[in-house]
Amino acid sequence: MTFKKNSNAIVIAAIASLYSATCLASPLDHNEEKWTTDTMINARANMFHPDLNYLTFQNFNKMFSTRTVEASSTPWRLEEDLVEINGTFSMEGEELSLEEFLEKTRTNALLVINDGKISYEHYRNGLSETHPHAVFSVSKSIIATLIGLAVEDGKIASLNDKVTDYLPELVGTGFEGTRIIDLLRMRSGVAWDEHYEFGGDTQLTEVHDNSLVAYKYRWCDYAVTSSEKLHEPGDQFNYSTLDTSVLGCLLESAVGTTAAEYMSEKIWKPAGMESDAFWIMDGPEPVGNEFYGAGFNATLRDLGRLGLLMLNMGEANGTQVISEAWVEESTVSDPGYERTEEGSPIGYQYQWWTLPESDAYSAIGLYNQFIYIDPQTQTVIVKLSHTPDPLGWEEVNLEFLEKISHLFSE
Image (cartoon, rainbow, N blue to C red; front, side, top):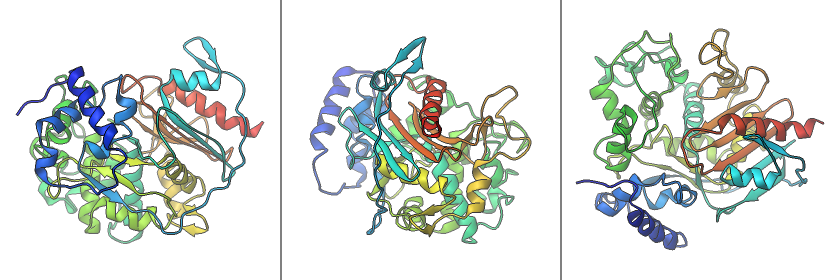
């Protein structure tokens, strides 16, 4: 079986069928044949097409087998105190109005919450209040939060436990000797090249193509068969979707259920999330796992509620969902971990990016997805995008988010 990349005829036909299906209310049929036809494989191979990713990022449930994260029956109602956002924002030597900046940075939606109230909310390119959007590596911050809840539940004894205590199949692999805390900090010591060249010849592309596109094996299968040790665990930062994939498999082993079910039980329902969310899978039911490293999809407002939950030190609408201690531990860098590398302007704690020059921190996903949290200004900002390339404009967007946040402190 082969798949083609960047074939416009295939992509346009696949996306047209997805668009026509978005209004269907019937549940997805998770049989293997449905998800492994040449048409579906070709669609997944082309999901990043820069002319159409504004739409694919809103419709991953039509391209992948998924697992649902069930919402609350009593949603957390967010009050509104809407304001106009004036002024200009800098990009590539230009000063742009807000709408111009959102257009140039390929924005699908922007939400600003200040002092617990929605200050600004804007949907673009067909996205709506009830429609989930892909957030890519924002998913990593969610998996880390679930690890914290598993520790609170006593399902994980200590972050210093060895990964192989929960995943004995990794004995003899590159992950032997790695602790859970090393995975959280992206310091497993395992050789991994997080190089985004989809369709190219890279380590990440190999696993992406075989697991997410062709459904031939799981991400954690690769960890068992092909992982190699490069550094001593804990020594060196190396951003790795494979590390988070192993973290997700460890979580599932520890709690005895799927990440989607555990997330619904521990976060989505008690925090009062309004809409069902979902994880895309790295294989069809029943063989696939949630794509722990980048597979979460949710509505704009629920992503805002997630940010607000963190801003409120784990409290949502009067319910303590996550302990204050875990929120602080996971988002404030320990001494020696303030920077991802020497000279870097950013740090990384437990799958959250930290901004050492301020109290702000952020979950960040490919193609410029952000949940930005600023305790100083009591602001949460969610920005969902469809940029032409997986990386680029992160610094521009972070400057934009900081400027928006500080409008509320003036």
